[in-house]
Length: 178
Image 1 (tube, rainbow, N blue to C red):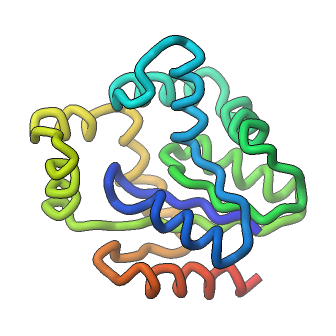
Image 2: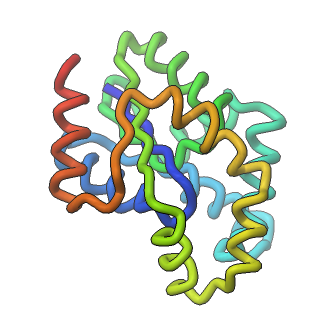
Image 3: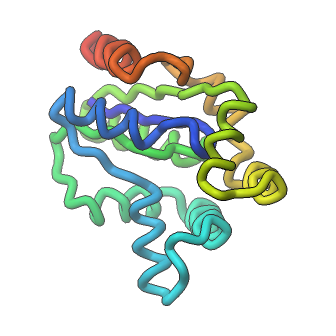
C-alpha cells in the first residue's frame, strides 16, 4: 500500500505522514528530505525554502521518474514495503507514484490536507516568515498543482483543523479498504 500526502506549505503534511506511517507500520519517504540532501551535496543552504523549491522544481521538470526513484533509493526502500510519501506536490510525481504502485501490484491513495489559508499563514508567520516571503513561496511553480489537480484527484481530503488522531484514523480507514 502506498499513501501520498499532499498539501500546501505548513498544512501539517509531515506531522500527518509520520503519524500515519507509524500507525500503518509503513516507511515514510519525504520528498523534502531528499531535496534537502541534494542541497547539502551542492553546498547550498538546506534550510532555505527558495533553494529547496528551485531544486524540487528542477527535479520534477528534468525527470519525474528519476526524482521518485531518487527518493526511494535515498530512503532505502525495498518492495513490498508499505510507503507513506510525505510532500507530494506535483501531478507528474503523483503519476509516477501510481506507476510504481502498478509495478508493485499495490494500491496508491492520495490524501490532500486542506487548511484554511489564514491559519496556514499564521503557522508560517510563527516560523518567522513575513507575509511577503509566504506570498513568494505560494507563487512558486512548485505550488501550482496543489490547488488544482492534486486536490481534485485526492482519494481523501482532510480538514487539517481536526485533531491528529482523527486525521490518522481517516487515513488508516482509507488504506485498510484495499
